[in-house]
Length: 268
Ligand SMILES: Nc1ncnc2c1ncn2[C@@H]1O[C@H](COP(=O)(O)OP(=O)(O)O)[C@@H](O)[C@H]1O
Ligand SMILES: Cc1ncc(COP(=O)(O)OP(=O)(O)O)c(N)n1
View 1 (cartoon, helix red, strand yellow):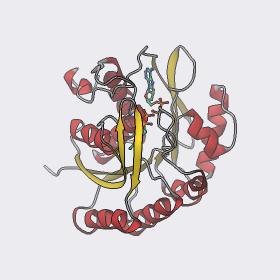
View 2 (view 1 turned 120 degrees about the vertical axis):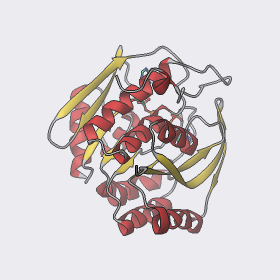
View 3 (view 1 turned 30 degrees about the vertical axis):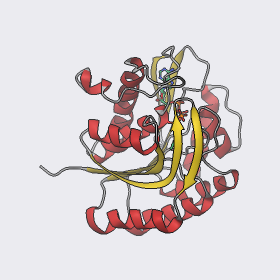
View 4 (view 1 turned 60 degrees about the vertical axis):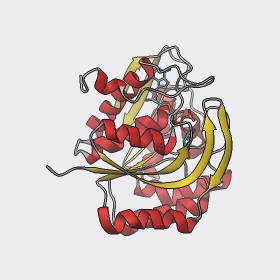
């Protein structure tokens, strides 16, 4: 058996709910061998982000090269990239290694309001990273920033998805956690057709790291050889289970439960 490998290039969340920690837990649960290149260390818990400590560009590139020159990877995701310099360096390395299964979670702001991407970095994301992307997974506010349009309806999301494909992304999921619909609709677009992935909206404040976990699940399943659509469908099931089966830890926005999907027996 050849083990499939998945890499996350993202920030560290000391509280374990988001960032690198959420990604590696998700990779492990979905059977992929997890690797990481840490872009920034955050002092963070369920109450918020208490400090951001960026890793040097040299330190980030060295971590990616350590993987690229030895282990290689079957898929990778990016999370918190923080600055245009980091985005440029990471994009250049992805291009250098010819990595194709690239999942971009364009993390901008944590739920508590802390900035995880500088404003000036949006341009580098559009110009350097999005053209290398197999799938980009913005939430609604992130999609608004990237496309420079307001998103109210599903039709707006369709329009925004097309703009992101025009920028170079091969496919797009605009997630629906921030909408005020009764159900949560994640809209998938593969550049040809749309698919609405619908699930009940769970009434909980324990949603810290949902976006990280969702994009990590897509990454693991791409590494495992699934099609993009099937990878996104698994990710939706994974995050639904992780939110429903809440851990109830911490005094604020608690983490999701990365064990829940397998505890329920895996794929439905
Ligand atoms: N209250 C909720 N109930 C069910 N699923 C949710 C809920 N909130 C978020 N999700 C799911 O979590 C994932 C992340 O969604 P979203 O909150 O929009 O992104 P982010 O965490 O990046 O802000 C999506 O797949 C979405 O369907
Ligand atoms: C280190 C780090 N990376 C990313 C995030 C944002 O994660 P996300 O999944 O969007 O969850 P919330 O922060 O919105 O709960 C983060 N907080 N920390």
